[in-house]
Length: 302
Image (cartoon, rainbow, N blue to C red; front, side, top):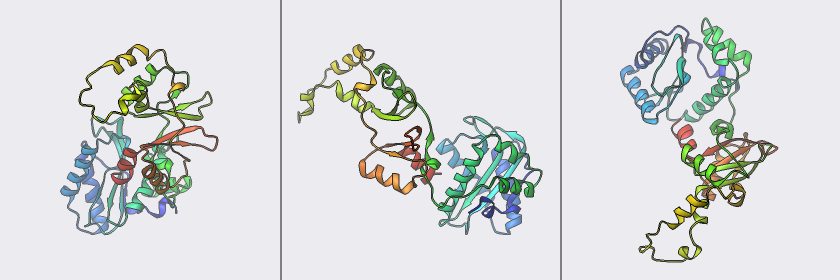
């Protein structure tokens, strides 16, 4: 399915003005209401979208993606706004927004919305495609740009749509000290270990590091109420620069390919009790990771 087949050219507005997030969202909704000839509570929708964005702390980088699910909507409506003058919507934003992809989602169109959003995000992530779209003089030209690019909506959401592209990683010869720095900095509990060709060879978990410094006999005790010693932590402080990742890493708990369907790796994560799934290509080169929180954020709250 082509993305242009889901978009309504009449809901693409290439000259949206405004200086605030709420004002721009309201203007787009009013324009859409005139086209659709359906009742829309503009203030309620704008308030709901902004509350959602602020609650989830969604940062934008040139493209805003406000959306709202509501049983009062009878279909999926994707409203597009091009801003000739980019506007900084929120403090957390990486760059001012010049494109707004607004979605009104009915209860039974969440699947189509997520697939459409994933298709658009793949397109915008490549080269200067955001600039190309924002350079459209009218709705027809906007649609033609997407048509020429052959932007396709996949039949299934896949790992590539949910994953976070290559982030922090470790090498086998890195010290535990370097690993602990990454755990602290990135708020991760599992970090991939790569070889010199960036192929995934293992994973290191913070839990495994802690476990290795606690005497084995303690794990066999039923009553731990008497434990007060700080000794295991002192050992880590003293030895973290003497040990390397190779001695503490394990085989990857779960991997997926970029084209692995969402439901497949989600079920495997649940069955295995795994919180992080690493995404690799056919040569096991590391391309990204999926954490449980990414599934919640991008799918259940996307």
